[in-house]
Image (cartoon, rainbow, N blue to C red; front, side, top):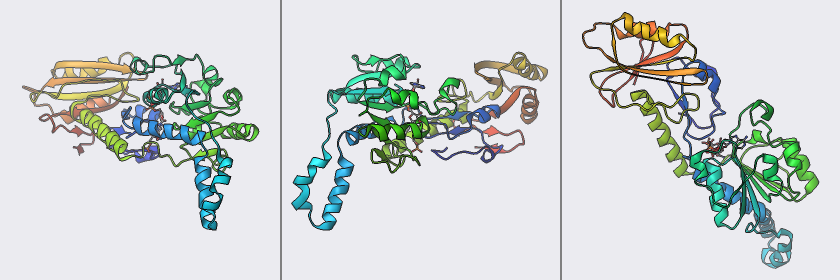
Length: 381
Ligand SMILES: NC(=O)c1ccc[n+]([C@@H]2O[C@H](COP(=O)([O-])OP(=O)(O)OC[C@H]3O[C@@H](n4cnc5c(N)ncnc54)[C@H](O)[C@@H]3O)[C@@H](O)[C@H]2O)c1
Ligand SMILES: O=C(O)[C@H](O)COP(=O)(O)O
């Protein structure tokens, strides 16, 4: 289980059965390599969304009123012992605007984006959103009068505030990724006094393009939760140290969701909230059966090889599922071991050595006490 730790491939030892990210973004994990190794990567969708949404709302206010500049100014005046004397005169330097009646563009309408939109609506904001992969679940949670745009460009064009709530995918937008998606083309279409809120990932924004925009407009603001060597000291930025999910509530919620997701996978083979494995909802193993899970390349003929191993040993498959997603398939087979004296370690070895099989586990024991067995005979509770 990890949070933002940048996981390196060589930290993933052969004993690793699964990885759970206590949070939403999995860009700190080498997911494609884990898929090749047959290791599921899980995250905790929505578990920290409220904490991030609250900070986005805070960012809306910080971007509208010169609160931080004002606080710093008060400290300076205090140090000089002239705070009372100067405050009424100096406040003219820190005038702001209200968010009520202004337009907020929400890019990415998942857990955080949809929740931000709802609360912004109750604060009297007009809303426009963009999300080409909008789920039915999120769509039902959006304010009814929210306008849906057909591109980021059209969403931001008339927006006073822009909130980025999309995942970071390392490739360029042309290649289906989101790296630098907020670059010159989009930024050029923003209003000169737009406030851009980035509580998603720093790499979504082209820092140089943003700097040019902030320098030129003088009025625009960039509020971000991520370090940025180009922008940290710019007078029109507010950069906080990745605090979006740092509340006790979000930490508890993400950790317990991750732990439960891992428990279900390790004990029953159930897959949910995985970013690289297909969902598979499985009942607890019957005490009379042995459950075998096999991850294989999603190619014709591999399933046949797997089934043949069971047939060869005259093992009766009581129930079976086979779900695939992209390049992999996930099989779960419940076996009745009655009447066999087969060493299941041997069975696992035969299965795993098949061309196209990536990993396998044998789960058995009473519900709640299941464990996985490695090919080299190590046990992992
Ligand atoms: N600052 C923090 O501490 C913090 C905390 C949680 C999440 N995050 C970041 O916020 C992101 C969103 O979190 P979430 O919980 O709302 O995730 P989510 O998966 O519920 O929602 C993401 C939404 O973005 C949409 N999307 C993907 N690519 C898009 C694109 N190019 N244009 C428009 N929409 C696009 C998806 O269809 C999805 O609806 C995470 O991926 C993570 O990087 C940051
Ligand atoms: O993607 C996420 O969930 C957030 O960026 C939170 O990351 P953290 O748990 O490391 O604060």
